[in-house]
Image (cartoon, rainbow, N blue to C red; front, side, top):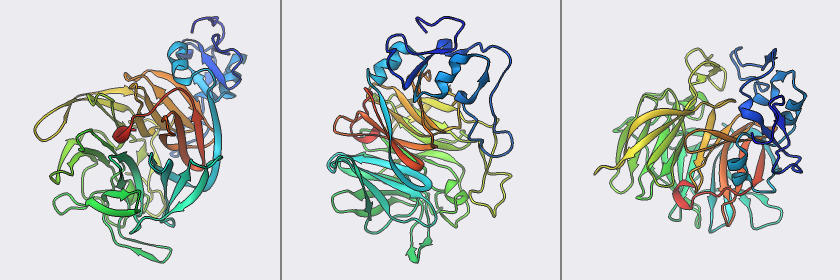
Length: 404
């Protein structure tokens, strides 16, 4: 890092020294003075102290990392993303459950978000027309249970739905996991895909939509493991391409352990899929929800693929790992308008170059499961997780429509 002496791991950023919420890390802290140690998650469950910022190291400057909201690893590109006055705030305190599938609807100037919990059916709406923003109950017709991922495209919200048949607080829900649409003007919902040649999907987790309307979605086993569907998985965990124009659905990737988040680059030449194989389904107690343990040394890379056009839609070649999250694993994953990548990962979010270089780490005091660009200029990043919803204001802008 320009302007930082080799003897210090961190400093106030030389180009923005007055920013008290921001720290610059020298040379990615590639050499730490011995001895150093970091808490780990080898005990079979995720250790919330297992973070880069909690590394114990004999360097007083590292306290700046622990106390900053934005950790900058590349100063020039980092501040191109952050701008001169980046800010982060906790906006809402919400139920202590996982919040997923945030979708910004421009016509409403609002974000629709869901909660993954056996006792919660309705969604919530964040009304950005009010100052400060307000929370409202959002009730689709008919209701959709277990919404795990979402995107906005051509005036319609598309949901990846993990939930199946269930009774939620006395309300009987008859549905199969799949892809649903929501008309944000009328609140009307309908399934557009709910089977693979007669077999139920495991529980679609996340999706992204290409400019031609093709939907790419991941289908891991979380629906069953979170008890959102009573159906046992019958399909391999893999990623599909669905063409609403014809109804055809095809496998496009079947080698990632547990495919989860998904994003498409602005030029649609690269597709990214995250792996959350650190959630170990094999040895988990089936009577304890969620039905997985933590496998600290399992795979959790983000993979990039080149896309190739064909008469049936894009297919994927040249699989390569492009990022290995330094904390937790990347869940929700988005591409910005300039190709920069943002992944929800543990207590914060990773901000990456299109080639997987960590440029900035956003740090929070709650686990982040998903993210969403929002606002009239799409230059706010909203953070969704367990117990809180937060907002980042910076220079980075999302993509209009499908991939935002």
